[in-house]
Image (cartoon, rainbow, N blue to C red; front, side, top):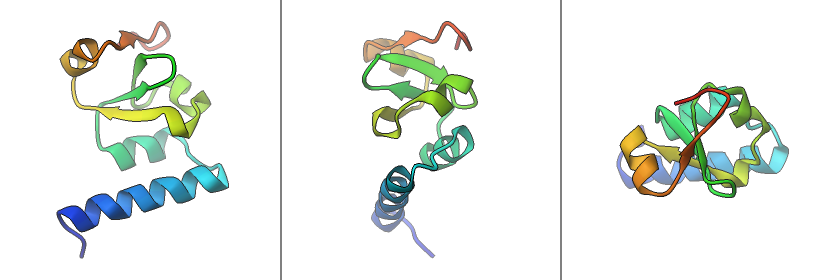
Length: 84
């Protein structure tokens, strides 16, 4: 149904809608970003997508990260709870 740019735009719209209604959860973050890691742009920590800390994170700060190497090279440090 949606592909390419349309799918990306739809994901962004859905993410904003979830943020506005305050229902962003770990499972939703992982599904939307479709990445194994979620970074926090505010704290510069990265987490496994299913880490409890992702549920506590402000959705505005969530960043999808594809690999541990990508996170480290971008300046993120590993979460002390899930130890990615």
